[in-house]
Amino acid sequence: MSQHSVTIEIAERRMKIACPKGQESALLQAAQEVNERLLQTKQQKNNTKTPEQNLLMTTLNLANDLIKSQQQFTQEKLAMKNQIDLLQATITQAVGNSKKKA
View 1 (cartoon, rainbow, N blue to C red):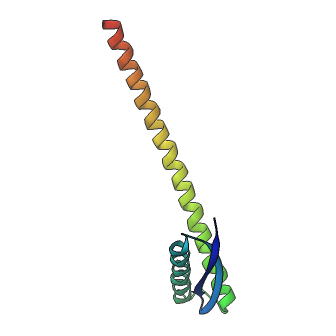
View 2: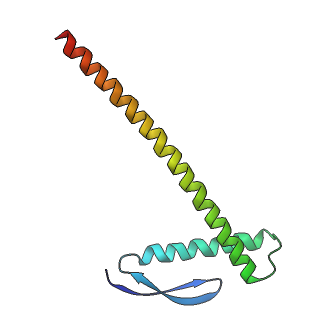
View 3: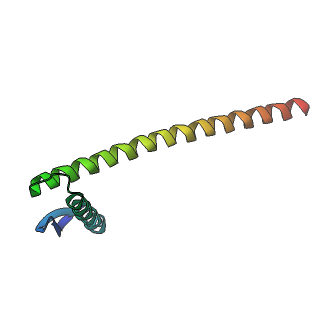
């Protein structure tokens, strides 16, 4: 897949980022999310004194959100697997009972 550059702005700094074709909107959306999170972190007045500290806190918050989402996904995947297993067992039992009657 070929790549080209996309210009984004994060923390009032413009930069060109290599991006696979077709992924431009996802990259721009990610940059927008980072900027919104930076603004939230800045507004919380959580003792970030420098732009670097603000970026670090935002990065840690994003990583924490990602970890929580991954854990929730894993739990939901396991619950879904358990439901599928139960349905398969129920179907197998129902088919087995109907074969015995026939």
